[in-house]
Every structure is written in structure tokens, then in C-alpha cells.
Image 1: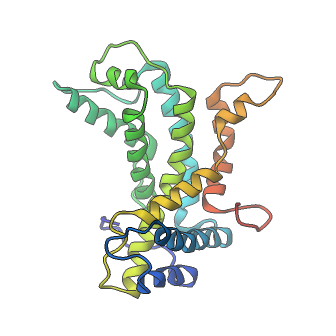
Image 2: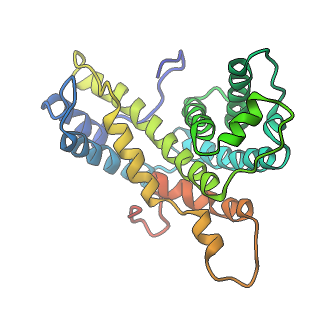
Image 3: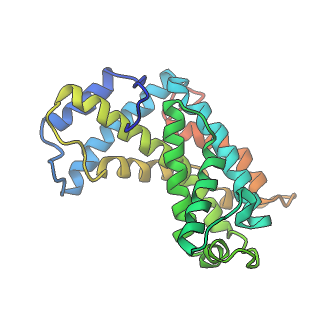
Length: 254
């Protein structure tokens, strides 16, 4: 995990079976064939959904995702209304210093200050979110960070919904990356682990496809026009549960 926090995640069972795929050479040290990543990714995705369907409170990840999802929506609302300084001041004499300050403010606001492994995964996902925000199509927002006092540039609905869905998928990506690091080294301790992150990335893409899209819900026929953020808040629980494979009828999300 790259932290001093002791690993407290699941081991054995389907996780060990997935890890053994590495030992059979399905993912070479320099992975190239895409089907290799898919093969291993399918094993880990199945293990993820089986784990959280049976033990939904594993590592406190589900609750950490619920809380961080709510904070992400609040942050997006705030910066849309009040601009980048809504999450903190942007000190610095250069554009890069102000961008770095915004990154730190955004991540702190979304991830919180928890020190558990679940919080570490949420923080890393928030880091990915802020890069999507700054490096996406909304150049006007980045300009508002670089040049404080610039007119506020609201986030587009499309960008908001992409941030919402990818955030949860990125938390799963970080969880899977940690599982690979912790489980594979037990099974094949001398192997270099998924060095380019192909497996975790493939899983994140599959998870995004499972998640509800607030933009689609807003555009659905309804008698009440609601803000996008309000719709997103109603979808946080569903998004988290589907990302982790938790369903009320005992079946995995599909």
C-alpha cells in the first residue's frame, strides 16, 4: 500500500485463487496482451463481488465510500457556485503553486482526514478525481485556479457525472491494486506485480459500466425538475453497492 498502516484486508479463498493466476504466468512481468489482463481481472472482480456480498463491512470500505461520495458532491457544488477557492485559499506566486494548492484542498475536502486503509484508498481515488477535473475539457475552470478572481466556470453536467462515477470506480481500482500487492506476494513472492496497473484499470472500467449515471436520471421524464447534485446524492448508496457487488437479493451486481 505504500503506507505504514498494517494490512487488514481479506485473504485466501477467491483472492488466493486470483493471485495464483499470476503464478501461472498469465500476467508477464511486462504485460502486453490485453486478454491476459482481462483474464486476471475477471478473477479479481469476481472475488471482489463475492467478498462484499458476503461481508459488506470489510475494512470499512463501503462506509468510507458512502461518506466520501457525499463529500465529493458537496465539493463539486461548492466550486461550481463559488469557484476554486470554495475548498480553500490558493496561495502561491506561480500557476503551478496554485494548482498544487487546489489539488491538496480538493483531496482533503473529499477524502477527509481518516488514517485507515479504506481512507487511504479513498484519498488516492480523490487524487485521480482532481486530475480529471483539471485536465478535462473544462479549461475555463483550470484558468480560474491559475488566475484567482476569474469568473466562476460551472462544471458541466457531463463532467460532474463523470467525476461521480469514476470516483467510486477508482476506489475499487485502489482496493484491487492493494489486494494484488498483498495476496500475490504470498503466493509468488518473487514476481513483479502488475507493474503497469492493467488489471486494476480494466476492473475500474468494468465497474464504471455498472454504476448509475446522475445525468441520465435528470433527463428522465419527471414531474419535478431537480438539481443534478440532489439526484446524485440519492444515487450514492446505489453507486457504492454496485461498485462493490452488494445487492439486496444476494446476487452480484450485473
